[in-house]
Length: 608
Image (cartoon, rainbow, N blue to C red):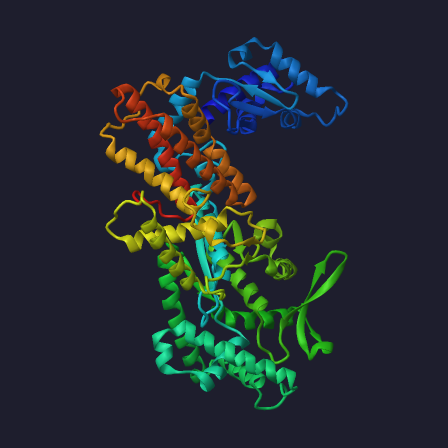
């Protein structure tokens, strides 16, 4: 892969700098690795080819690497430039400088040969075993816990959980491909006063027939009705009446926390029905988890935590708020009160989250933990981190800012009838729209299972529509953009992949990595090779920035470059040597496109 050329440039840089006294010769191995990480493949522009300046180094980054803080006034930039341009060994690399970047040129045939051979040999691992990433010896010893999806039981899987599910799945895939031990954790919201409210509502509005026919939708209907009743009680100031919904729901939850069987039996039934329905959605999305945990697991340990905090004196009583109990945490230049226990003695979501974090550290001894939850929960996770530090958990002090991986909202995700919908309804509608689109499109190929292909295309379109946006931004959902065959969409990526697969299956040319790379000097071929060589840089960029966006945008450009090359580089009817060289190029593009689609959680189609 491109690492071969990065290291070659880095070795020459080190040799030149050590000879001129800018680097000590004793630091050769470490310096070459660091210098290699500064070398980037030049991004493809519309008219760019591999003929010159395929690799570059930012001069400021180079200066920062070489900088001697004890001598801040030396003219390092000029020294670096003079050093490189006076070194005759750089002439073979065609070094140039444009005021910001040093550009290096290799023989295009050499680059093509190395890159295509690497893709052929490494297959799905191409891009993930690069020198840019930590070595497998380091990462295989590191455990990462990623909590994502985490729907609330007794409610349908709302589209609000969609972003958490697919973003969390992306990062889980990415960490695993880079060699980490990943714990994929789904943390179900199945505890709290809201379940007391639901139980009270079910006694009033529940229907056994409806519950068995469509559990989640019926429970949601009950939940909406009982919340409406509760709101009316607040408006009419009847909340404090002994038989108010508020008091009945609070009493039911108190019984649940104390282990009262009748209350727990109904809760267990709702929970089991919910999980069964969620599993159908996860299977359809191709999502799996290492562990499925729930808030209820930590009811007892949360109460034990409160007892411990009382014993240590960290938990204090807030007389102003009905004798709730709180812990003080540092908040900028002052301390803030964070409530840990309600006035009736029941635990809070934060209390259970603290207990869960302590259990996870003991169970998995993780190096990192990420919570993939929308930006509106940012304050909650700041409090969680602060409480963990305050109660003396030393490991919590090393948690980075990516402890909480937040994301923006989806705006306008409605059906054609304008109703806010649940994820199952959204997936069903995407499937139906893809069926209609395929019937209208003359280029659609006959497949054995039209419904399955339409479902995969619908899911691809929804996932890519989401992941192509910056994670922290809100975005507006658009069916028109989502299902577009020609614009940048999931359907477009699937079409590009299926087209490459069709070529491989139908060209009647044997695939081999032993080709004459000199036969791939066409500008379209050279641009495609250069873009393929950047895959490891894009993976690293996504990893460091926690942005799936970079991978998706890379795949869009890969698909466009592949389609352009397919027009100008015909395989069928060519002499054997030319056909095999071009086939290897398209095989490489298909391999990377397939790898990238799987990374973002999309199942690549071979025909559509």
